[in-house]
Image (tube, rainbow, N blue to C red):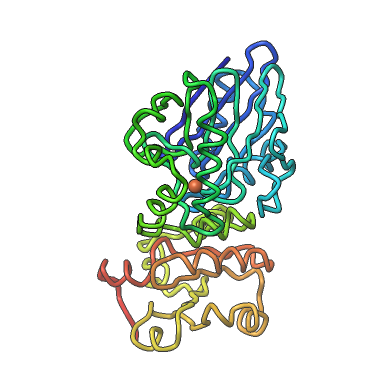
Length: 342
Ligand SMILES: [Fe+2]
């Protein structure tokens, strides 16, 4: 079997592939590593058959939807997953077959209600149910320490002691463990009585993970991250440098409409000479009146360069085919010492 473990910060993804049939399965991919996974598939000459998310992640962005769409590969999650982009939903005991790979789903709720572990001959992918020297937390949406206790003690820990454990997270650079080693050494598993275990989990008082809202929002619904929105807009528009713009407005050639998209107060305080004011919030409503010539060259800018990128992409979508965004914003313009009007 081809086996690749890809660590992204503390997140662990796994690529498994059957050498005889070239069928591959990717478990818990992370959004920022899509090109890396594609590279691995190409390097091993294997074809992805399934993308599996072990649960709704609350601390990082799943690549499942994007990658599934890009490669036309079904996304597999537990039956209770809220994600509308899950193409195949597994129940406890269901088996996923890809070539010679057979992965049996164990429903192991507790960290989340839709958590599942995937069992193979010699190993188990435990998601965030069982971690090396720890367990997933149970205080985030749909978490439940009682369920986690049952998932661990009635299911995972009953696997053979030599079973290899590959979790969805490890923040200390470790790749795997075994069920036997976890039973012996995992501090949380020493609380073998339900009440003591639940009490320990409820007393953890952990800080909320960074990006919690954005991760839940995107992973539960298949929505986009803000970074994705910006990257998609940026891919659709050309940019103009501060220097180039300065030369063009200095030459007073009048061949470019410079649009300031900020709020009125900001525009009145200072702006790029010759700029016209059209706040981003009114762009679509006023565009026909303000920009009657769709063949006109238009440059958008804002304070830091993000809103202007979105706006230039919108203008291009509306048919202003020569819209560009400033590479930078007013902050950079001021810092570089270019002229200002107020
Ligand atoms: Fe998680």
